Length: 95
Length: 242
Image 1 (cartoon, each protein chain N blue to C red):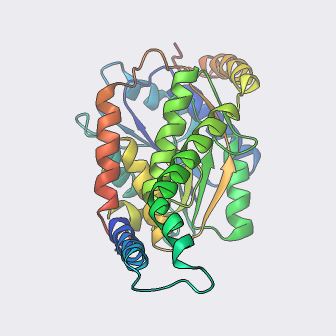
Image 2: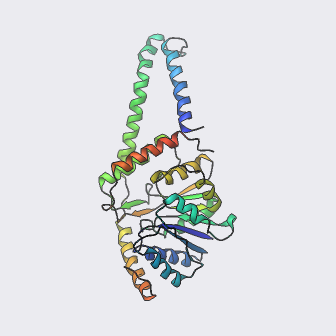
């Protein structure tokens, strides 16, 4: 299955469940219709907001905790120098 | 045998350094190695420098397999793979950038991890603790994380750095994966790793540092971002286990 097919399957299942609950075809045990009617219509929006928050969190945290490596740069500069001298001595043209 | 496939285009300045660093790393750790240089007819004389390096290190270590035109990364790997030596069942292929953004010293850790876990693939990641990037401004970091997030949400790749291209593969694994790829550019590297995870290969990660000395010269334009998004859409629609 492709990722699209998996996503499509889940979307169908969740939408069907949502519709069944909305039209009182199925009932949630221990939850009255009154309470259910206040919660179920909000669920799609809640899902969207949760997803949006997740993305924002991942992006924000990712950028905030992005590793820097100044030492790696400095180390590389030294190695370039060493390599250049060594190779020039052996006859390689190093610009 | 550890074969490094190095596609080059206009890398006259960096090629001697990367070869020197690779040779040093492999020799210090007493590993059998070869570097397969696939030059796409660089007009700056990259091939000449490669020939000089061949004189220094020997033809069994520096293998030259140039091509007659700029034919792209994916085909460069396929081309290079044909010339790997050593026992196919016990050989490894390393793919990395030739512009010194990837440092050969991380190969030691990658090789060790491969042996410890019998991993099919070991990939370098810039995003976990111990990894990082030098030379990127805030905008570039946001784009990088954004691209990675998009791939994560759309493809559930199972690795922390999807567009990274510093990897160690078992030779037969990379052959198998490359023959199935459909994408180009950044997405090509991502496709290989996403397919690998989907097909059940064992993938390990090692933190790496990425020293970008060319950012600022190369512009990451709107075109590339669009083609990246298109590439992801194509992969979402594909059955990656086949």
